Length: 266
Image 1 (cartoon, rainbow, N blue to C red):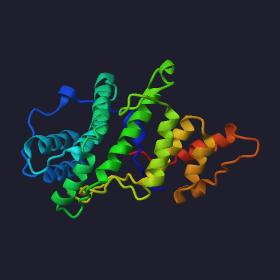
Image 2: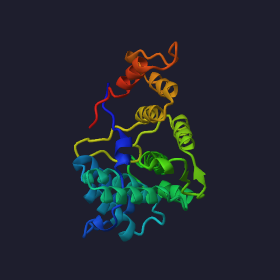
Image 3: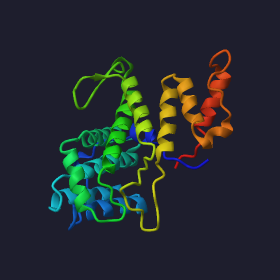
Image 4: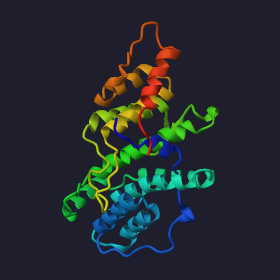
């Protein structure tokens, strides 16, 4: 089976930079140049600091775009990725997760931003609205994984970032399932350049389905977890029975978990 990127691990470890950024940021002429170079450098070198600096520069030093929604979404993802540099340092991890959450929660002028990008970006890979799906997905991952690290007494509810109303974990899972249904052609690389030597990130809709299957398993929804895996051609070799006679037990749960864990992390 192909390698995938287990984002729930990233989000479990993701957080806010606050004072942890670069002291200097490279100058940029065009907003879209800045974002392109940011992603290109990240895919090529996995250097989040340089990528973050380019995105910040695109926001602070360019004037060709009025709305910076796609840059805020890019920062959300980059802060999540950056958090992996701080394993064992919980304060830094929490800081980057909070920063990612803040950026993913930014939805002001989203329609106006899409219209502007449609006219202002001239690269072959340009996509005026791809950042919207990236933002929605990033926010869902962030919220779901934030729930799992809450103390048990706090796991009953979390707050919707837009309304402040309680949002139950199942509602977030249902939203993720809806995202899968509504974005069958999702690919994180949409709207982004490849790296200098052709590097990309393998994060497409099948990988989101695998993550959803993990979330179902972690919440005891084993049939749903199994059904998601069975919907993927790469998992047909597992020969899972999603409606086992006699219900779920140690043996068939073990088979389901083995199938879930059969992908290679990188």
